[in-house]
Length: 115
Length: 115
Image 1 (cartoon, rainbow over the protein chains, first blue to last red):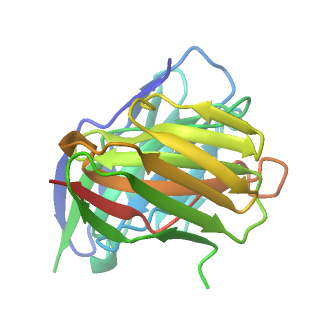
Image 2: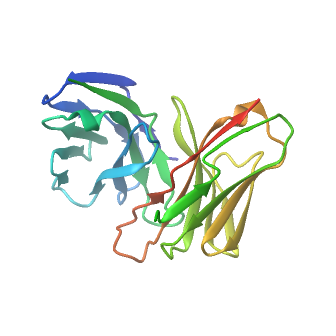
């Protein structure tokens, strides 16, 4: 079974700084997807960024980028020029593309951006 | 209008009561999922359904049941609620054959408290 670990329960940075959230996972699969979801105080789960394991290029979405290290089974999220609206819970998640396509989530990292 | 809706948004009930959480979607997706979120544990899969006639247990299905009344509706029931079922519950949908690259779309969540 796959597992996802987020070792940073909480993080706090100043506005405009860059912050990196860590995520490691364990799987014997070669083909899979990795995701970062954001959960603001509204509770809504919002997809931030997605990475296909077969792609060597790291995914980027505006101020959000990932560092995907397949051999190390590491998938960190970097937020550049952080904004107050980035304050949220962030979840790393794993998915096998075959079968149930269920998401396996990490424990979450609570990120606070301070003015 | 939201594509995935959940009712109720918040519910307080007592131990032993039967509770139904409802999920509706207008995205036309065949696949629907129920997750529960607990602090420090992330989200975990309770049940999932590929269509009206295909329902499957997730990793934490004990104490829960589901009903897929139509493609657009997927309900989660707690037959006899207990306090450790106090959690945030999410419904999600996906369409593997679409252009969403295996993205799951989440409802707004239901906060359930069992006293």
